[in-house]
Length: 376
Ligand SMILES: *Cc1c(COP(=O)(O)O)cnc(C)c1O
Image (tube, rainbow, N blue to C red; front, side):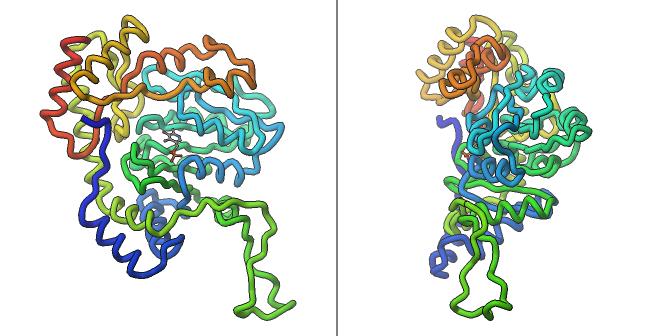
């Protein structure tokens, strides 16, 4: 049993055929359609597709003009590129420990990490559960700190009824195959701010900034873009967007299926006392990109034994994610100690992501639960 499987059918094939028949395969009309679907879904003014959520986060830190001397708050338990996005622009990631009941940033610890150099907070909605946005914004807004939402795992996730990705200043999504919607690789930036959208548009397209002044020379076939910025090529292709448009067409079904399976896991695991289920935060809005349990006794060794028991039955699992402060790059560069963020360390050592994907049967799920009941 795989940990996840994308849901593809004739819809993707029809749109891929449409794309290939059109002979237009780089960023073009299908990317625009994909972007419109993302923007409409999130009720946000701008959605800009790009090559990955890592690219989206990089575009976000560039658009917010973060750089050397600036500090960016990042939860210590997240995918490594949440932190890399600060490093890419020369800013310093400042880690904050997470709340073990949500695996998201702990707002009480967040306030203590703010300094006069703090310019942005990366609010990660880990595993599909919204970060505590009210508390984050209450700290950020009065101080003029910008909020980037890392919604890589959280398309369709709501926080107090509002879709994430459009609550802060700028949102970042992933369409990697481990996420609820996939284009193979892919990402998107969402924002209501015109200034940020314009910068993202330019930076993903080599730094192109528009067209030269037509009073100097009238526009014609000879007209080339102006480049006033140093940009990158972070464009999504229309081949990928074709798959994305098809995936967005079934988003609601994909998410309701994940929600159903996530809640069913939680019910079935109620009596397994040695395992913590997802129990904190705005659970109504959880989309279960990952269903993550935590082994409460026996630490990393016992977690690994449980993963081995599952693997022996051909059930694929993975740890939740990284305690980023323990990774060599960050530990060495900032002299961080493993015990500095104890919840992140414990989460990395004792979490297990269980298989969850639309199309997973109840029999599949029962099989996973049976092993957890027997061994857990
Ligand atoms: C998956 C993920 C990313 C990276 O997304 P890519 O599209 O693979 O670059 C970033 N942040 C979080 C929290 C993620 O889960």
